[in-house]
Amino acid sequence: QVQLVESGGGLVQTGGSLRLSCAASGRTFSSHVMGWFRQAPGKAREFVAHISRSGTTRYYADFVKGRFTIDRDNAKNTVGLQMNSLEPDDTAVYYCAADSGFARVAVPSSADEYTYWGQGTQVTVSS
Image 1 (cartoon, rainbow, N blue to C red):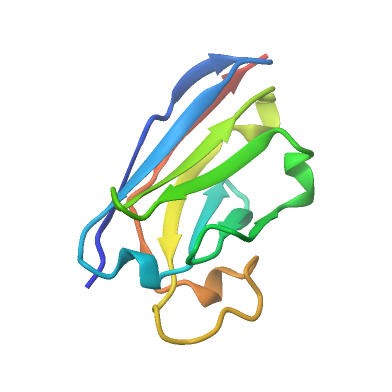
Image 2 (image 1 turned 45 degrees about the horizontal axis):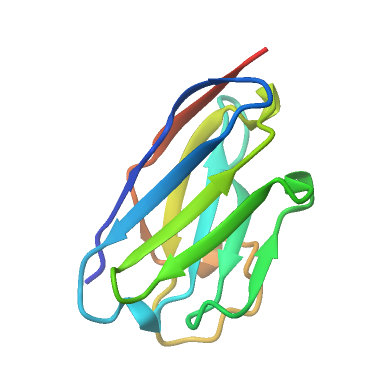
């Protein structure tokens, strides 16, 4: 029902910035809670950021520390992640995710709350 394609990953030095973008297919984008997750080699997939259906509510992982901003444009079926002050520990594959569009999301930081996933985009931060 929903296909997600991430873009914007790349190689950046410590302290640099990247903007990730996720393009969604379908006519019901505004019905979906959206999130960003990331996974580094040997580590579990972890929550990065969440944005509500209307875009009015946002949640962030503690490690973001004010550095990242999630946004969405329902008219364009996109969700973005602006990443500033990047650190080597931010190196990971970043995934865009969407919930079912039907149920309430009780725990936005849990990957189990999301139904649809993109293929991921690699972010590498060099020291």
